[in-house]
Image 1 (cartoon, rainbow, N blue to C red):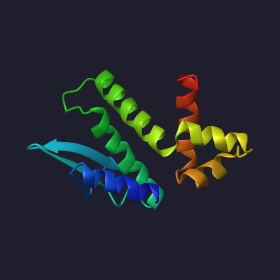
Image 2: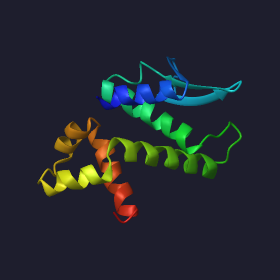
Image 3: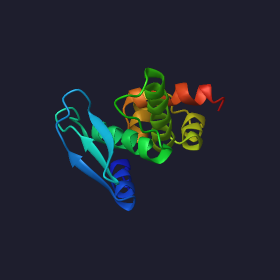
Length: 136
């Protein structure tokens, strides 16, 4: 199953409504309104399926880690929440054990790894940064 489908299924199981919504300044957002959870994805800012999957995965990271903040949040609170959401997404999209397997097989080019994991090269670079920080 593709990553984007698994993320949509995950959202469905958690009863998170995912909608296309023009956001202008952000490509996606997680909102909790009236006891319901929503993910809005701007279709104009997510041109490819990978971009949509990465936006959805990141917002699911906010949900699963509880990394939610409001308008009055400080920059530190926002950075922490964004880091937690990114970390969750990367660990789901590029699992460390599978990444290690690919590296042992000799697959080292970011574009090849991105193709294998169905993510952008930027996500692969972030995965290397995250896992090196975690001493994997």
